[in-house]
Length: 406
Image (spheres, rainbow, N blue to C red):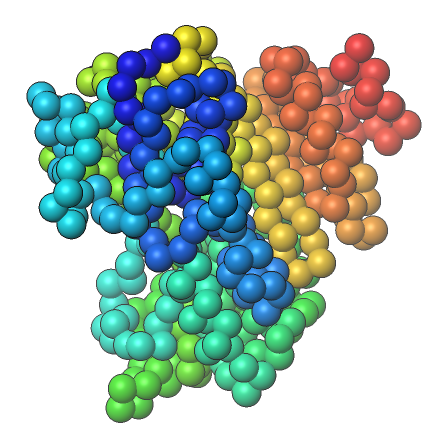
C-alpha cells in the first residue's frame, strides 16, 4: 500500500474515479483532487447531447454531490497544478500553495485543438468540451440561427444533430472524404451521413474551412477551400484535442502524443502515474502504445492505478469501447478497428439496426453497432476473452452469437 498522500491533478472522469476507487479499496491516507473547473466533477458525454438540448441543470451532471467528498474524506481543491518538484515530491499550485505527495497521478486530460484561420477568435466561434462551453451554447442556439460545424467527428455530429433538432439550419464541413473517417468503417460513415442528410443537415466533404467571414464583430459565414461561402451566425469547432502534457514535460517526464507510461500506467518516475486522455500507455493487448479518449479508458485506467496503489498491481489490459448518440441513433463500438481489412454486416441497415464486424488477417478486431446493443455486448465479451468468430457466422442472422461464447 502506498504511503503518504495521493494527489490527483485533474478532476474529470479519470481523476474522480481514482479518488472513489482508492477509498473503495481501503486507502486511508490523504487524497487531494485538484479541480481546475468551477464545478464539482461532472460527466462530459451529455454536454453535446441531452444537456445541450436543455435537459437538466448543471447539478444533474455531477458524479456525486459535495457531501460525497466530505464523507469520503477526499479534499476537493479548486486550483490548477502548476509545477512538480519531483525531488521534494511536491506539487505547486497556481495559487502558490503546495502539496506534498507520496504518489502523484496526472489526470490532466486534453484541451480543444483551436482553429487557426482568419477571424477564428470571434465571440461566436465556439468549442464544446467542458460544461461552461455547453452552457454557453445552450444560450446561443435558437431556431432563427444558422450554424456551421467544422469537423464531422463524434462531437461535431452530435452537436449538429442536436442543433438541427432545435430548428437551426446546420452545415457540417469536413476535410476527410466521409464523416467520422478516423473512427469508423465506411459502412457506418455512410449510414450516418445518410441519416444526417435526411434530417436536413448539409454535409460538405473533402473541403476545408479557410476563414470565418465577419460582419463587424459578428460571424457572417465560413469560407471554404473550394471557393464556396456558407452563411452562418454561429460556428462550432470540433477538430480534435491536444493532450495536456506540459506539466509532465516541464518536470522532465518523457512525453510524445501523451504522457508516456508503461503497462502499469507509471511514468519514468516511480512516484508519478498518468491516466486518461493525457496518457500514452504501453498496451500488452494491442502491442505498441496507445492514447485513447473515452470514458471507459479513463475509468478503467483509474481502477487499475487504484488497485496498484493499494497493493494489487497488475498490467492494464482494458478492452476499449465507445459510444455516440446522434439524433435517434446510438453508435456503439467494441474494440479497435484500426487496420481492419475485411468487414461483414449483421442485421438490417434499412431497419436502422445493424453491426459492422471488422476483421484483420481473419481475426475479429472490433464491432461497430447501430441501434443493436446485443451485438455490442457480444463484442465486448468475445474480444475481452481474446477470441474471434468466423465472418460467415457473424453475417448469418440464423447463427446465435451466444454459441460463439461457449
